[in-house]
Length: 89
Image (cartoon, rainbow, N blue to C red; front, side, top):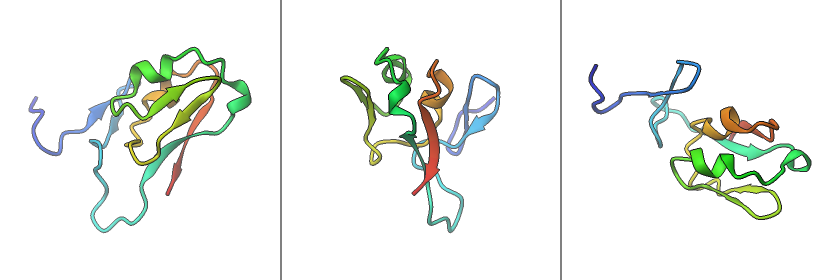
């Protein structure tokens, strides 16, 4: 199977995510991950390890650089505490 231009990324559940920076034609909004429940963050760092864009830092809690975030959902899938969710910006 070709991994050429326009190829999607596979999530753990087998579904596809758009390549970083990709958006549907004419789209004005884009999805980014946000720290929706910081009180549940244990600063384990698993989100940092899976982020392909290095958009997450962890001190006491995880923080996301929304400019770097591609909306790939890797952190949403990986976080054992459900700290992250996607939102449109």
